[in-house]
Amino acid sequence: MSTAADGSEEISMDDWASAMAEQAESDAAMTAEEPVPASNLFQELGHEEAAAPVPGNLDMILDIPVQLTVELGRTKIAIRNLLQLAQGSVVELDGLAGEPMDVLVNGCLIAQGEVVVVNDRFGIRLTDIITPAERIRRLQK
Image (cartoon, rainbow, N blue to C red; front, top):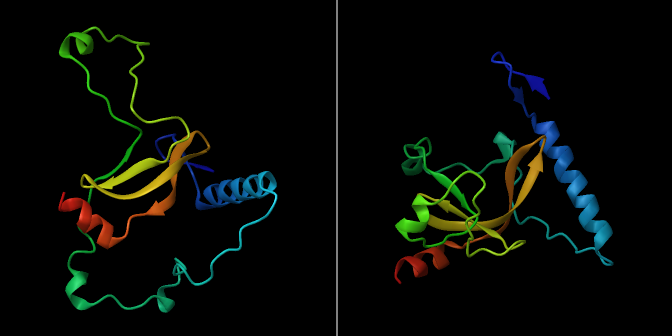
């Protein structure tokens, strides 16, 4: 961990990697039989030379920023109750504890995941990616 010029602490990739390794060890210890990892499902990140070339027509959209949102849950609340909220109030959400959280890009569900905490910072470990065919099916509803 290093300290930025403004005095805040930055989290290095090594911190995230060690946290993920620690989580993997604890997950393995909790299960009697270890799952067999599927090989060649995902392309390794960080290997520029091994990456498949992106078609030229996609190059111009790769730098467009999108809004990534992780949703814990939702609820409907009457304005009367909303105005009564104060510091320490609890708002009940429809999501259950331990349930995967939705990952949305520009409001469209693309994945689900679980919360991870590293050095007092939150992150999300993706556990399920929605296929493009499923995304299109959901848009048609």
